[in-house]
Image 1: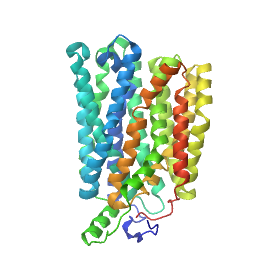
Image 2: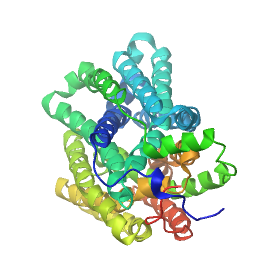
Image 3: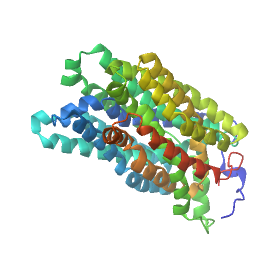
Image 4: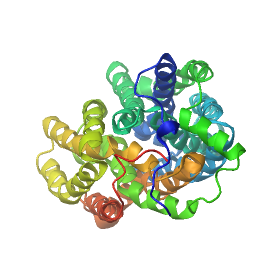
Length: 434
């Protein structure tokens, strides 16, 4: 595959324009709402376990709840293929509008579901169906929004602009964690389990129309318009094999997705089960870590435009190779809220080193005419196999080994895989989008 960049005309100009501001604003706000809907499930896992899987065995119920969380990831590759293909053929705008509608429907469905006590196993089956709908939407959202944001970025500033994608994903998780923490603080445990758990899901569904309205009024990206014209003129003669590029995106994503879902989705449950924190404390600790991540990602993205993507990405891999075991050991030996906050903040900073340059780096692997489809496939398969089931795997590892430190080896293995992938990847920070 030739590495020579095409003409720079496909990239948007340096000068900020109202169209770019509208487009990026719609993408970011929609992304926040989309990932709030998807993530709030994890923050209420201990409540949902009792509402939909009341087996009498707390561990079995929690494992079942996290298994359903993972089911939402199983269909993400399918969503990536179908919605990503739609985005590459018909435009990023229509793909992003579709994803926000599907996510809102799945979220409202969870909020309205009868419990296991009311209809038995049918409630569990309906919960699975709702998570499948959310997962299908998320599979198309990630690739489409990443392609959209990076393609709107000015040349040499894709890291800075691409960080909006991860900042908005983290913002969605932050909003979900903040909502769950607030309800756990304001409501009694009885009220939260009786009806309060429904509020975050119904709230998320009501926000969907806002995101849809914003996304229906945006323009397509300049690189996509250029690719459409080039295709019409027969200019796209040969293309790199999508599977080969998707495999590289897969290896790139392994650590990214495992670290995200271990340290920012599973941690509230871990802190309650193994560090002696109550639900409110665990969720507030998680919320503070997410706030640090949202604040740190922009700096990492901007820095990657100056020094390149690889130094920051490899630094993040090194941090996740070295830090998980000693930090978890420290947390377990001194189980307190200040220790939990310190540990989660350190992991958030390590993740920011990856999440800042990550969207630009993964988008730069692919040519514009296949970016949304194949980037979605590579990312979503990794997320399905590793990230989505990370809370389940962590819970299973602890139960199997009897050691709360067991999940750290899962993270360390992931860091090794991604480090090898990134080390063998060329630096793309200062190349034009293909």
